[in-house]
Image: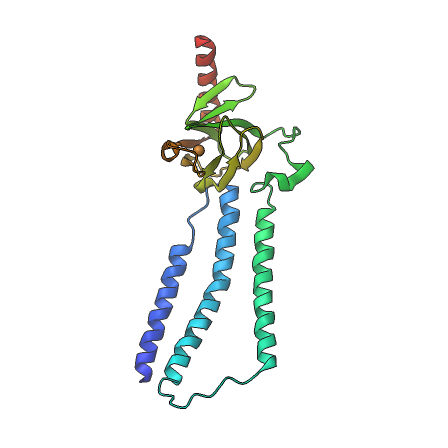
Length: 246
Ligand SMILES: [Cu+2]
């Protein structure tokens, strides 16, 4: 093949890689959880891209180089090469494992990982606590201390730690807010905890991510992140209408 054609192909590959990287680059994250997850994805992408390129280029080279080989020879032992690629694979897997471990041990992603240091364990002054009750088929949110209960929509303040205490009235559900980086199973008779810290105001979709019966598909809701004063206004509104009707 002429060098010009090789060059054309190589630049096509480079263009594809660039496009892929641009598409994969996440937009600004909407919560601390989401930022940590996006960072991991990006970090792993930068490791995976050169590896993929290396493997593909080697493959294409081998196909081209040996295309008319009528007398193939068996592969010869090469212990040094085998040790090298085994060790290299080990190093890569270790890197992936360690990176993922540090993300998983982030207290926003795994509240239990914080152990006794879980700020939700009663010593938090700045943290919002919301009790979430999942049921067939919907979500109920209670704000302890504010005498407020809402359905389908949970309003949160931006730039504050939020702790969700999750329980189920019937079967297993899963509290899933992809844009805020939250996903936590919800069980009957056993409380689980999810945390987040939204950094952008806006409305985020909430889904149930555990097949929980005929109405599972419409078991959704909205996480409404507002600035501090709009959040307090909403809470005051809700509690006064609750005491007026009760
Ligand atoms: Cu469900």
